[in-house]
Image 1 (cartoon, rainbow, N blue to C red):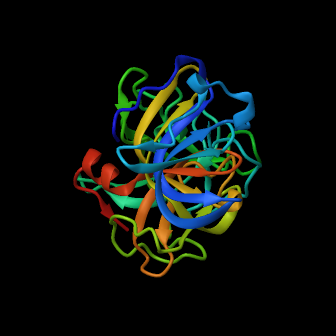
Image 2 (image 1 turned 30 degrees about the vertical axis):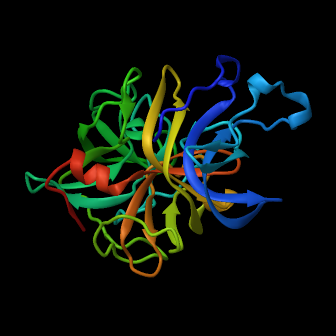
Length: 288
């Protein structure tokens, strides 16, 4: 993303910068734009020249989109106990809010693992916890189903590319790898802006969406630190995901290609980590 100088007074309202299709009266108009995502949008009449974001950068049109506050997509309502486990199941570790089991993978050591976000599987965003429970701890039928094996720590000082972790399935735990309503993952890859996507999460179940940006940098406030993420995907509509869907796999509906791992949400947009970045960070994964 090209460097942009922005007045310090408005940085608190700016939550991300991406590249998406410019919208006029909330409708796409076919022009690619550098997009500034803000918590709230003020009319130009209330802004001084110093506080206005640029209308163009290096000849490329700019746009300002009010997406609301960005938050990790955790918590959500109680879920049912599932046996066998399936993608979309509610999972939780002690000290973290509940999230979603995204998919099953075989790691480089040959272990069958569930994959979700670091912020779902690690209370401190840095080190593995112990047991992963399904459904959330304290609800009827909750049981330990896996043990966290690896998380990629999230940095408060550097830009992050992933929010991901693996938990090895405990002995005797059964699973089915097909994503409800979506089907089996047919490989991983880069997204196509024109392809509709689907996901299945424990909060909103099966939903469908469209890319808003395939290259966004956003700021996410966790409970005890704030972190910046680069090269994030943004999706519409607002119904695509909600609290509790963190960890859901985003799949191209037509091809079955896994392209993203959902991790954050705002009232307007939903955000996912690139699967390509996850494959790079956790080398040797086989998606089941």
